[in-house]
Image (cartoon, rainbow, N blue to C red; front, side):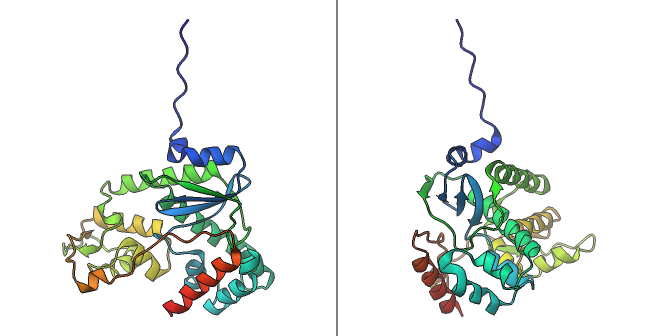
Length: 265
């Protein structure tokens, strides 16, 4: 008697089998991967962070929805209770709909990078919650489906991924047609030193959508990845990006974030 072969896993499931299992068991906690962290509550994704993307604070303040002082007031008042999002809405600083849109943008943006292929084992810490608090949960299958859609879109625009993480340079080739204003703003940031992440941070814009513009510019022959960078005192002194620290103690996490923000001023 022959046994029917087991069905092949779906592409979405292949992104992170651990994430699939956590969704099935309705887990709550933080899934830490090589390029970011996904926060789950009852098996749904409630927030995501990645060093490759601007955080929700950058998207809110650079986009004009919130003054920077208002953001830090919300963190100081509600961060320890993990209700920063609720405080922003209840205090009238941000409209509920604007917060949801910005939060979803930050979540999908960071999840795209956090779910990137890696050989580093993922870790999950049960019970950990993010200080932003509840905004709008997203099912795991929706996050994975959107991540795959974004990968496919980038490959359709331009299949070379070298420029996604390397410093970028202009090729100097003549422009056959006017560059759209959105792409022009990205092109103006290309200086041989900045990466896609740097440009997204500078513009206060989604890192993924910055990649879309950069791949379109690469397909037009206007930008390319820079060659190997010389290692000198300036290069060795550049700050090292680390994954956000996750702790079950919200007071410690809040104090460390406040310290880092003050040191960056």
